[in-house]
Image (cartoon, rainbow, N blue to C red; front, side):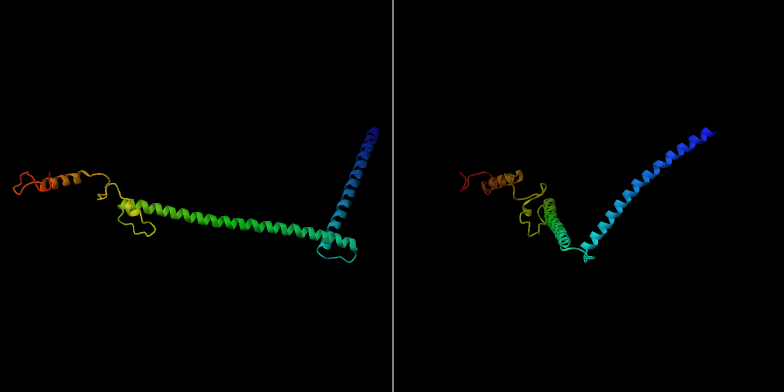
Length: 177
């Protein structure tokens, strides 16, 4: 039993020796971080124009240079943002113009299509002077290219009628050779 207790004490002492070493490293790291945070807070106050009394001329010049560099970065970023916004606005304006042109084109095509269906009768649009020329294929128009069969028959009947004598019999007339 004595040997067991002795082993317990030696093991227990060896475990106790390690934690203070780990705690010591952690404590040193904590002190470093705490010092760093205090320095950064002091620098921030100095940049904001607070606690400048204990600083030397050299330190004040460094702060002034830091502020100048920061101001240049801020102005550059601001200029870039404004340029991006301007570009976006120009694109939106161009998109609006293109959208309007597309709508006008669609309306014009619809008007042409409707005029085609109406046979060119209802083209009252000042912007569309040629819509009346477009006619539906089923619409009987006097503007035909070539000869229409009914028209040819009419011409033939007129020629035959003009070349008959008053009795209705074919004969010679003054203009017929």
